[in-house]
Length: 65
Image (cartoon, rainbow, N blue to C red):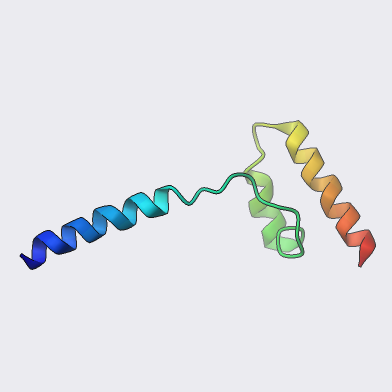
């Protein structure tokens, strides 16, 4: 009984984590600096237009601060 419950929980958690993609990263203080910028830009490697838009938003965010 316990093994069946564990198996069901593992399957449920896996499905939940796979569904947490959430789309492209947002331009914020974390994603626009250092490692965050590096990780965020890898999400746009196949779409140069969206990548440039993200960089422009980061530049605008940095000018505000």
